[in-house]
Image (cartoon, rainbow, N blue to C red; front, side, top):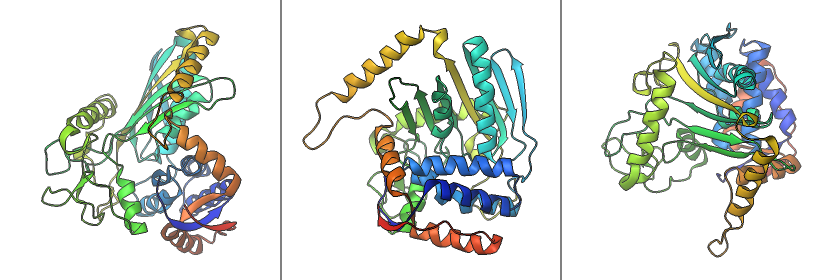
Length: 362
C-alpha cells in the first residue's frame, strides 16, 4: 500500500463519477458501469495501483480508438464446462464480469468451468472478478497477460507482462473471502507510475534501467524484475510463462511480447489481451459445511501463527479487508495527481466532481 497526499470522497460518489466520465467519452452505460465498479472496488480495498487512478488510461484508450466504445460481447459455451468470451475490443472489465457469470453458470452445472476471454483490453485488478465469484459461493482462479514490461530472469529487456494471478475462496460465518491477487513481477507497473506521481523511490531490486542495472528511480525504470528479485526471479518468470500460455494459446491471442505497448504513442491499435478464469463449485468437491469448516480452520490457524515483534501473520486479503473497513468509514483516498487529471476530464465532459469529505495523507 502506498503513501500519498490527496483527497477523500465517498466510494459510491466516486463510482458514479467514474461512470459519468466513461459515458462522457462515448462508452455504453454497461461498459462504463463495469469499469467504475471494478476501479472503485479496487480502490476501496487499497489496491490503488489498479483503482480509480486508471480512469484516465481508459479515457485515452476510448478517445483514441484502441478501446471500442460500444462492443458486442459474445459469450459462447464451447463445451459443457468451457466458455469463450469475445470482448470485441471493448473494455476488459465488462468482458470479465460477463465471463465470470457465464463461468459460474457452467460450474453450477458441471462442478468446474474454464473461461477463456479474447480480443480484450486491460481489465484492472484481476481480483475484482475472482472476488465476484467468491461472494457467490464459488472459488475462482484468474489471470491476464499484458504488454511486455518485465524482463526474463537474468534478462535485460522486457519480455513478459506483469501477468497477475488471483485466487479467491469463499469463507463462512461472516468472514470475508480468502483473496490472493498478485503480479508475477516484483511489483506491478502501476506501482512505478504511482511512485512517479507521488515522487517516491522504488524499493530495491524491483526494476532495471535501460542497460539492465537495478534502479530505485521510478523515472529510470525501463523494465520490472520477476517476482523473486535478482537471485530468485526464475520463480516469478516461471509463473509468468504459465499465465502467458493460458491467456494466449488458450484464448487465441498473442503472448505479451507481441502485444502493442499500453504506454506507446500509438493507442489506436487494438490491445487484444487474453484473460483466463477457472471457476469451482465447492459443493461438487466437498459437502458445503465440510468445505466451509476446512477454510475457517485454515484461516484461523494461519492467523494464529507466531510473528516477528510488532507484526502479525495475515491471510491473503487481510490488509485489503482492513482497508475496506477504514475507507468505508472515512472515504476513498485519491492521490493529488490523479485528482487533478480527473478534474480536467470532468471539465471536458461536463461532469460534476464528487464532493471532497477530507484531505488526507495515506
